[in-house]
Image (cartoon, rainbow, N blue to C red; front, side):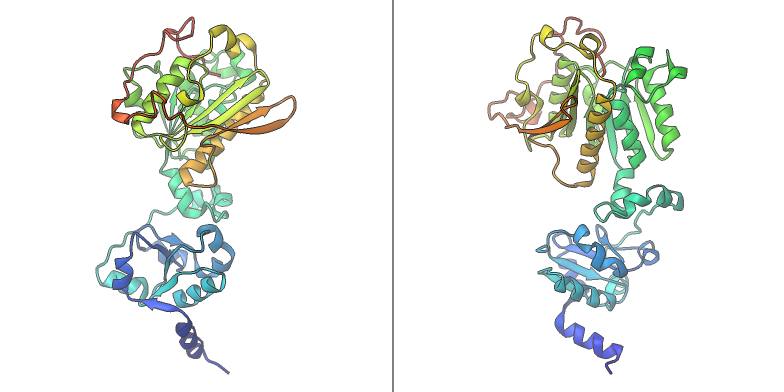
Length: 391
């Protein structure tokens, strides 16, 4: 009967091993996979490593590293578990997998680059356990969410569901822009607010609701009118912007500023029983100016205050905006870049339309440094100097 040593010897014949020096030479271009246990990983790891304990490898590796042509360096503490893990990956169809001889212990002893990873507290593990079960998210993805910054343009109908789901997901920093106060007519659709908050500043009400839901979230409030004089300063440092306004001048201004700063915008709009969502990712697809080259006459684009809106509609559209935001933050799936998702509540149907980038677009076809940030107040809205209407 074969012993463990025999099995290890045979496995090493079937798996390519490399030295720590060779592994260091490909650091940054190859994916490093740490197959140690959680308590070992928490004591230190090679930076940017994908963490997946050996016992979960067969079940979760295809979610962690979906492209089987990706070159992978597998390591453990001493170079034993990594050999068996590498063999399993080869059997699963991975084309270029090596085991690092000597493991993390040798790497660390030789003074190579390592760090102590940020880990979740026990309370956070309990709160986000359904995320942790998803290989595409896991602990590293959850940590990324906690370190992310999202700016919500509006604390109204679209901003409310987006904020609630992003807060529940653990987005660590959320900025909220709105200079309106809570009114009784808002409560039909703006679910961040309640009767006790009528007359209160919307940003203050939003902060209370978000922090009651998740104290992990830092909320930064901006009780100001967004304009050319402050937009670049306000949006600076955010990873994603969620657009929840129905004001064309503000949308054009946001488009210019987000292109200049290189920040993606998750755009949502609603009208009566219909909603739309798309993602404007700077220079990866069309921008808002490509989508709407010129604003329509005001009489053809009434606000929700004028045309009405079914109360649940912004909940659906805002939730999709939250989903697209999380996909951008985690690099998941196929975001709605270059695609417009249209929802008809009466037919209960979704349709997707392709959108092309305009090569002659006056905004996204030029160098970002050349974009001039200026007000669009004289374009279309009859009361453009008033605060933007948030739906």
